[in-house]
Image (cartoon, rainbow, N blue to C red; front, side, top):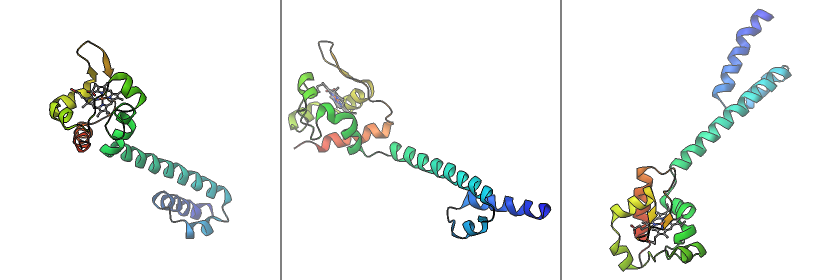
Length: 149
Ligand code: HEC
C-alpha cells in the first residue's frame, strides 16, 4: 500500500495546488482525514496569496478619482473647492475656478504633488504624496482639470 499511495498522494497534492475546484477531490480525500487537513491548509495559504496579490494590483491601479478622494479631498475637497476645515485653515484655492486653473501649469501641479507645496512666505502647506507613480500623478493632474466649472 505504501509504495502505491506515494505517487497518488503527491499527484493529489499537485492537483490541489493548481485548482480550487474541490468537488471531486473532497470525496477522494474523505478516507484520508489528515491529508485533507493539509491540503485545506495549502488551499487557504494559496487563496491568501491570490487575494493579497489582487489587492496589491488593485492598489497600484487606483483610479485618479479614488486617489483624489483618499489623498487630496481632505484639504482640496471632493469637488475641488477646498471648502473643508483643513482646506480653509490652510488657504486652499478653489480649483473649480477657471482663473485659478488658468494660473496653474501642469508642470507646477506635478511638482506640487511630487514634492509638496510651500507658500511664498515659506509655510509648508502640503506634503509630497506618497506611493504615487508618475502615471498616477499625471492622472491626478488630468482629474484636477475636470474639476473646473
Ligand atoms: C494637508 C492639505 C493638503 C493635501 C492633503 C493636499 N493638498 Fe494640495 N495644496 C494644499 C494647499 C494649502 C495648497 C496651496 C494653496 C492652493 O494652491 O490651493 C495646495 C496646492 C496644490 C496645488 C497647486 C500648486 C501650485 O503650484 O499652485 C496642486 C496642483 C495640489 N495642491 C494638488 C494636490 C493633490 C493632487 C493632492 C493629493 C495627491 C493634494 N494637493 C493634497 C493642501 C493640500
